[in-house]
Amino acid sequence: MTTRRLSEADFKALHALTGAAAPAPRGVMVDLGGGQAYLSLPPGATAPVPGVVVIHEWWGLNDHIKHWADRLADDGYAALAVDLYGGRVATTPDEAMAAMKTVDTDKASELLKKAVAFLEAPIPGFRRRSGRSSAGASAAPGRSRQACWPAPTWRRW
Image (cartoon, rainbow, N blue to C red; front, side, top):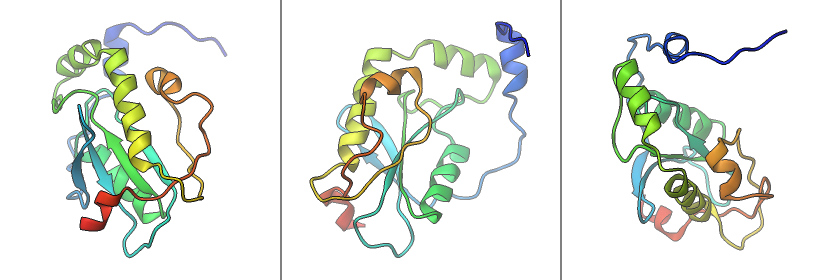
């Protein structure tokens, strides 16, 4: 198999929106101290539960990404989807490309560290994370399994 570098036009074509609406989100937005994230918890679960940090695609933290977090919560995970675009959600490929190009990788890494910290505590349990982006890979190197316990603020929900 051969690979080639994609042009921006080819990349946009591969990531077209379908136009279908996502189900209504079931989680809540939380403040990570310098950024926002969408938190979805397993229905009826009691702590501790494993957690996963979700990194959105180029459209931003839209309802489709929130739905993926809800699906992970249905599978028993505390899913925390970070917003790397600061509230912007793209609706066209040109908007998405522009938003993706404005991400400050240092700030994104800091936000991902805060997301991991939000899910961490000293009570034993294990977390499995999904794939890491280039920003996420440096955010918490060597931490694919960690202690996990809901943050105290989770008890309010």
